[in-house]
Length: 314
Image (cartoon, rainbow, N blue to C red; front, side, top):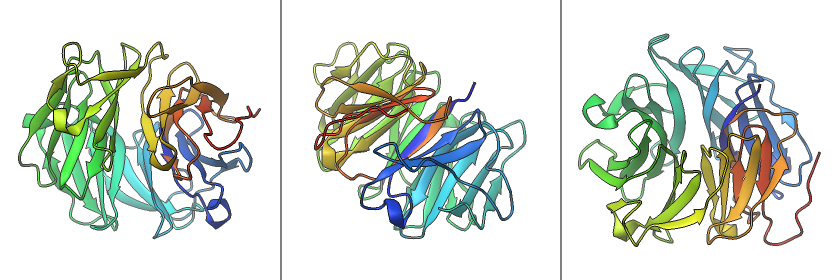
């Protein structure tokens, strides 16, 4: 069974820039894939350079669009890698302790040219340069709480992440100081995303099968008791990750019953669609082209296009 864990909403190549599209890691196929939002242009990105395969048990992925590069986590070989968007010139940026690590989500600080990533098994949140230098522990074992998904607020100097088994989300300065527990009471915490301009934080409450949000100004909150916590969506199938398409006011959610769904950031009726040829999305990146909110399960995709009718694709 293929497993999808991360999804990015970004322009894929120059030819995709106007339409926008998706790039994702397909764990089961050991592949990085991309397509346009209309379902056309499906490509398995060929990898060449230092490695000829993206790896196995692929996890998070992030795109450096100005630099024309992508970064991803290979949990099979415990590595962080980089390649051009077309898959050429691949580089192993970091080889982590084999069979002792679990590299998961990755995020980029474009201005600082830094990549941040979670290592759930070693209980660390680390960063290094886009070139692989200066590997540094940002959040150590005392506070990391098995980090699994993360997001950055570079302008405010903050990193946000969820604990794999704690049910909580956390925040700290980018140098690791000012650690806080900001959200408690989830039945397993997964994806997290920030709408910085809107002053909102969105997150996955996995085993309660819900997507929540609350104002950043209301933190800290407890999910069952805080009136500031809103439940946007419920009844999902073990959701994992999410991505925000802020221009379209949409949210993308990855679920386990193979599907990707797109939903409004302000709640609405989601729609589910297949991610062509995939069975296990683990990472996702999107071009924020005003397309909609996406929720993703293992091998399907769902989104709401706020500007045009949504059509299912094969």
